[in-house]
Structure formats: C-alpha cells, structure tokens
Image (cartoon, rainbow, N blue to C red; front, side, top):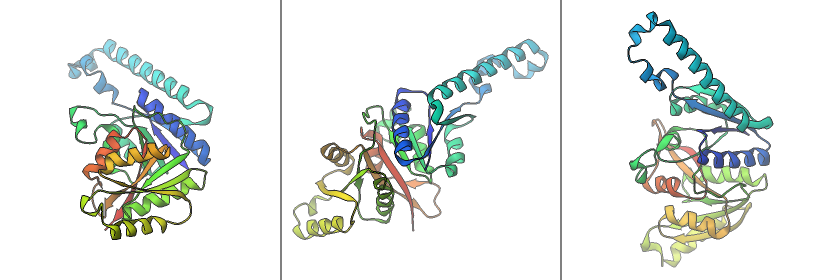
Length: 278
C-alpha cells in the first residue's frame, strides 16, 4: 500500500498525517509526504515589478536567488522533520491540484487535510482537497480540523447498493483484512419508505447479503450527510467509507450535494472511493 500525504503544514494537515501514519503501519505500507509550493517567482512578484530590468540589475537577481535557495532549505527542513525516519518526502512547485493529479497514479491512497478557502466553502466542497477529490482516480481520505481520530480501528461503510457503493465495500474489505472492524450502514432518505415494511425488509436483507467481514448493520433515516456521521459516532467508527461516481468519459467525479456536504462537514474522516460507472 503506497500512501501519499500532501501537506500545507497546517494543523489540519497534521491531523491527516497522524491518520496516514497509522494506516501505513497497519497496512504495512509506505508513506510519502509532498508539499506543493507556488512558483517562487509568483510569491515574490512584489520584488519583480519591473522584470524587464532584471537583466541589468544583478544585485536584485542575486538577492532573489538567495531567497529562493533559503525558501527551498526551509521547506525541505520542515518536510524532513515531519517525515521522520520512516517516510519519504519531496517538494514540488506549481499548482497544488495539478501536481497532485500528476502524482496520483504512483499511489494507492491519498490522506489529506480538508479545509475551505473562502465563503463558498459553506455551500460547496472547496479548497485543494475538494478540487482534488472531484478529479482523482485514487481513493482519498479527507480529514477536517474537527477530527479527533488518531487511529482507524472501525469503519462505517455507507451503501446505497449502487455500483459506486460496491467499490466502497471492496475498499473497506481490504481494510478489514488488516484488522479494521467494519459496520455497514444504509440511510433511508425518502420519507415515503420510512414506514414501508417491505422496503425496510428488502434493505435489511441487502445489508445481510454483504456477507462476512461486517460485524453489524445499521439502518438510519434522514439526510445521509447528517446521519452517516451520527451513525459513525454511535458505533465508534473512526472512518466513513463511501463510493464516488466517476462517469465514463467525464472529466471528474459526480459529487451530489449530499456527498459534498458529508465530506465538507464530517468530523469523522471520510474515505471516498472513485468508481467508474456507465
């Protein structure tokens, strides 16, 4: 298991790193840290107000080069400290989402902090994590600042019995092979079916058909974005596993508003598993 942890050195990223370390140890995998920094010339744009004169200002060029080298040393020192003896690290330059997408095929799992970058994050999954989740082909665990999880011992697997949900179940089974206990959960979000005994019986039977590996099944009613975290707290789950639809031929994932809200607001880390569907 090759695990990638992108970091921006924030408190949220630190919490994600704790989860990434736990999974790397539990799964017998490798851990690689990466920080993507904006191009140095862009960060120091205020010093380059007249770039066409740089060639005749060697002192400015010298100062810029010294500052560039110092920035590289500083970031690499921070990465080295976070990585410790058991992980590798690298510094990249450019757009964070683009760079992470370029790296994704070299890893089996990404574990990253998720926090917003503006007022629209109240309504849409924002930030680097949100944009990456929408476009990646690799399973991603998002960890928010509110998370108190330090070790993944039990996972709540949300299922609506779709093709995407099957991908989440299979990913959860892989965790189960390494000692993570699994609980299956279906949320009935249509009030018309709440008191329909035939529907409830069908759902219960479908949960039972998931087979071995699940220690129990949970049936809840309401909005999945609210009910899945509530169910996770109820059963003591440290991770919520959900399937994400990747439409064949589409540019990115099709995140519904409820999935969006779940990843954006859950205090329990969320593992989103992309699955290609027709």
